[in-house]
Image (tube, rainbow, N blue to C red):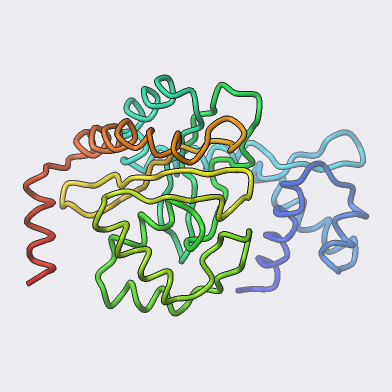
Length: 259
């Protein structure tokens, strides 16, 4: 990566946390103010950065336009939308749609729950594969050799006392997910939240995304969480059908993998 591009991306990441002065940006980038100013002027000319008043800079409209275009280009998000909205309305809990990207979970859609306890998640946020229900669903669809390779590459950071911390335990969990058709995060990512997730398939039968229902433990115990699974699976299947999936194609895919 070129040095100028690296610095420009560093500046944009810093501005993502809020408006900053030239001095603050120069300090965070570790370069002279003149260098930062030159980069900011280029970014400003393309509307990636907006100057606010005489001292502050913030992210500009071009970045949000690109982000929205990228999200709209994900057909699975558009196809799954009605089913996810209905699931959110039916349960009253937070519903996420996530995809697999560069060894992590990326949230590509979110429907906020009606309860007062808010989820610390947002569209575009990344999360680990080993301790999220959506991550387990996405990883469980991989071919056995790829699944084993992935399991061996993860860090297994212990987010809570319930987090899976070994490749062996993770692979066993993925086998279970593949068998039953849904995954559980039993307070493994955040100790006060638990969730269930199910796959959203595409026209060829593969898992293109995962849909989850996330609930604070103070609102629902684990048995209550599991009681949401039928509604979740039904919504995931509806989203899959809207995304071009048929059950026969999924059966054929599984048969060919076993063979």
